[in-house]
Image (cartoon, rainbow, N blue to C red; front, side, top):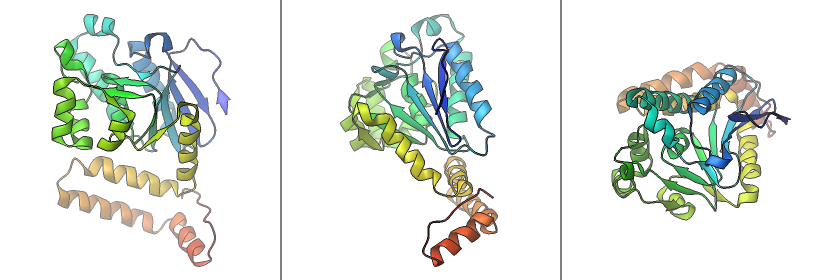
Length: 262
């Protein structure tokens, strides 16, 4: 694992050929979002998105208290509201449409814009110490980075509205029961468990993984008939790849496949 040693950076990056770990790095401020973090995270994603060796990205927070406590209040006070919302929407859309899985390792508080970042990720693992909220109504606002839409799609309208209208905080156990997260893990095992999940995904065809992400991310915004058409197109595009031939041969030969992403 390659580590970035400059701990003053807004995003800390670690990298192996298959995995990138990105940490929001303001632990003294509960990793609250600033313009520097938005720019640095966007830059990291730009650097990674065309890397054919990459199999997954883990997004987490530095320190032990927070994944991300939302947007820094100073940024809310000084920023142009439309530009602030658009900036957050663009970043979350980039995560949601990223070509490889982005997995949130939620190590503590995920509130406001922090929960919206997590909602944009494809999978979410959480520490037993994590908590989840969209408390914008307590500030006279609503979620502005896609939270009203993504939370309703994840939890259903009733549960999503209850969270937003009351600003209440969910524990990890409640979040799991509601379907907001995939797994609960002890704090000391969160990163290793998330890395194990990445390793499991990395054994499969990278073309198939990218195809699944594309079909789901784009298909959810389409009428069912068009979504099914998109699925058929992606299926057909993969059918003649080397990975499909390797996968079928390996199945018949009762061995593990060796996928090459072509």
